[in-house]
Length: 318
Ligand code: BYC
Image 1 (cartoon, helix red, strand yellow):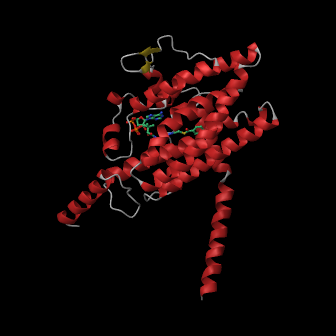
Image 2: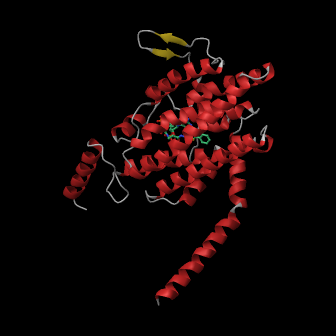
């Protein structure tokens, strides 16, 4: 390709991004844009399917049939989100089998939040309220991401996440208004999930190597710190309604900025979890690899069926 035509392609791409239109799979895009999207969408997809584990842990022990049915539906939704996202990644020219191999080899990430254990039933409430709440704040702007297939997948995911968040809030509300033991269990879960939920938004803007370029490309619409602040401002009044305390003695309302300002975040913990030293990193990956191996027969059966259908349709044409 000559310099002129690649310069024009870059200019067309820049113009589409600048006018807030969508880049579609057949459009030319810079290599870095493609790679960044593959990294982020794959990490997002992996988070959805690894995120099934902490909640799956409580399906057999849900306190009622109603709670069990709701939790099963929620965990199934997460699998569905993973499928939409792997499909979106495939429009960029990668295969989901390749992405799963990278996850299993520890070469691609999933969200830090899923390396924490779910110790009590109240953790189902805290995950719904805080983790899904943080996910919504992070993901609603991705509905306007410059890459069409990712933006469209996110619209449906966000609708389901908002149901997830409300079911978590309702679990905590019920526990918080129950016996003193139930209220203590709800408070303990919030104490354990609050700080990891703040870390979900990623490092501070000053420490975030990808943000500036991702924002220039319209992949990210707000910075990590902006979204984290939005989540804190939203959560404080909700905690008051729940009658629960957020585990941050320094959290205070700042009249000048109109924001709730938190105490310092323990970034050493965040980076340790990213490096594989969280409470559950090994267990999550081992379970994922085992589930993949145990599902080999399903993939083989699907391949055999697809091959049979291909032969039948070519015979029908002949
Ligand atoms: N965990 O330059 P930065 C859910 C990595 S699933 C792990 O700021 P970026 C749910 C980052 O990848 C919700 N790694 O990066 C499911 C980068 O790594 P590299 C999942 C993290 O990408 C089931 C490095 O740190 N949501 O809700 O611009 C049940 C530097 O960071 C994390 C998504 O995936 C983290 N928390 O921004 C219930 C949302 N944070 O460069 C619920 C989509 C950062 O070394 N993703 N890193 O490879 C995003 O919006 C962005 O990727 C992030 C990070 C804001 C997370």
